[in-house]
Length: 401
Image (tube, rainbow, N blue to C red; front, side, top):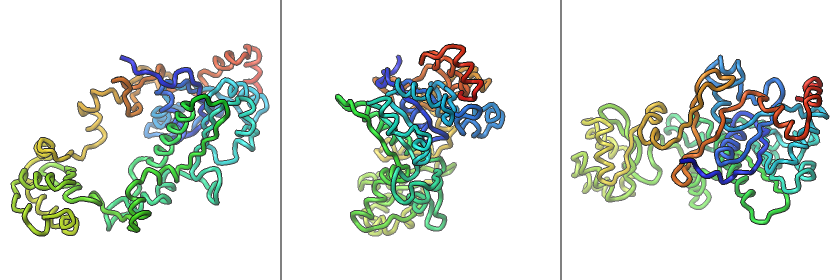
């Protein structure tokens, strides 16, 4: 069964590099949009040279590129050349969406900013992703994921009190920026009876802050700045990570009845009536003593055993797993989160990538093609725009493609 393609018939121009922008367009492609990746001749998206496999980097098919670009087509255009710009403008006239993640002002300096492009396509959805947005005192500063993690406050609350600050172990700011952009673009495309253009300004810093939920609201509303708590839950105890006989186990006993169930399952019922732990507030104030008492009991069995017993009693619990372990788990392996492509051109091998974490009418989204070799569809796309073989050869000779 194939998933519906709600963005089918929509054309997206992906002028982005590395992660936030490509991740946005990765979502749109899997929702059915035709995504054309517009890349610099000769080098393309910097992600083509990034990843843990040197051979793939050398082939301009780096793991970082492969992860976010399945289903897209690639055209190389030199946007600094007049001929390249003219070809690009013809392409824009056919597009519903343009996504870019240059620093603010770059597209304007090329003569290809929103003001120009909306005259070419009057209902264009133009999405600009940047670190800090299109205005404000920080607009021109460079922004990488770790910079945004530090500025946003994420690092200040990640880690234990004696180890923070720590960065999150994957590029969370880039990813959140990309998801935010994909949501905004999809909303613009869904806007009923829209005939005018839309300019979407996504700032990674703001997108991250918007997702920090309680960490921000506890300060804004209650005046309590968040602090690092390691693996402990700020609102409940016992809710955190505990040692067992063979590894770590997360337990989230956020309700009174769940706390009592934990005590009974680990055969420490006397803790229920202990005044240090009898109420939610008391358990928060004495979380160290409670964790020590429970850990003594949890060390008697392995994490999987406790996971089964606790979940059966209505207490959320789960082992702390590695990426290989969770990808092999039946829950993930059986739901279609990973799609595979055989003998991918340019990579010279089979590859597997993760699709968006959604099912539509019971089916996981899929695309029809693997990530493209740099410029693989240049001639095909230019032909569709009306360029003949001689014109394409001339553009190539001039360095415009």
